[in-house]
Length: 294
Image (tube, rainbow, N blue to C red; front, side):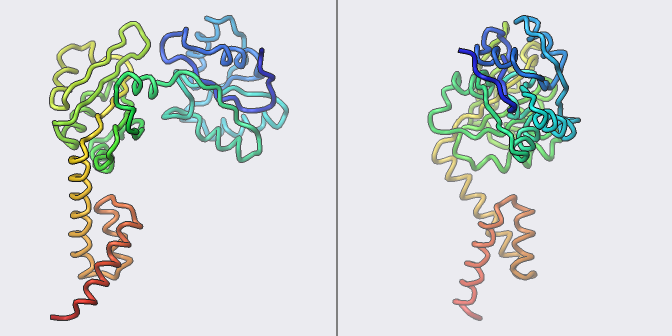
C-alpha cells in the first residue's frame, strides 16, 4: 500500500552502491513528493532515471544548506512535500541535511524518516565489533594537528570507533590513527561497500598503512574505518593516564591562578570536560585546606 504523502520533509535513504538496496517505500516516496532536495542533482538524476522517476530537483549541499533550508520551509508552508536525499546512504549522517531537518522542525512541520542503506551500519554489521557498543565520529579533521587532537579525545573510549574517510586522505588518516591509538589495536577497513570491488579487511594498526600502500586499488573508493574495541585493561589505562594529566595540569595552574581561570585553561590544554575538571579542582582545593600550612 502506497504511503499517503503530506506536506512534510521525508528523509530518504538511498543505496550506497548497489541500486537494488533501495526500499519500495523510498521509491514510492520519491515518485510522489512535490520536490526532491538532493546533495548532487546529477547523481540523483541517475538514480531516478534507473527507476523511471521524473521529479523536480533542487540542490542542497554543504555550501548552500542554510539558504536551502529556508527555501524548503517555504515550500512546505505552501503545502508542498519534499524528499531529502544525499549522494549515497542516509542523509544528515556525516552528510548535508542536519540543518534542513532542524529548520523544518523549528518551523513546525513533520520530518518523516524513510530508513534504508547506511554505510555505517553495513560496515559495523560485517566487522564483528557491534556487540558491545560503538562510537561513531564520522570524518576526521583534514589538518594533521586537528586530526591528532580529535583522536586524542576519542582514545579513552571503551567502545569500537567508527570513522568515514575519503580515498584522498585515507593513508594520512590511518597513519595518524596508528600513532595516537597504538599499534596493538586492530583496524577493520571497509572499502566500496555493496559495490563491485567491495573489500573488507582486518589488520593490526601497525600493518594498515603498508596494506593501503601495497596496491593503488586499496586506496580507491569510499572508506569506513572501524577501530576495534580496546581491551578493558587498555581502556582503564587510557582513562588513568588522562586523569593524571588533568591532575598534574591543575596542580600547576592552581598555584598561580584563581580556580575558575585554572579550570578554563586546564580544559583547553587537556581536552577534558569542564564539569570533570571543575569537580577535580574543588576536591584539590578542599584537600589543600584540610592539610593546612606545613
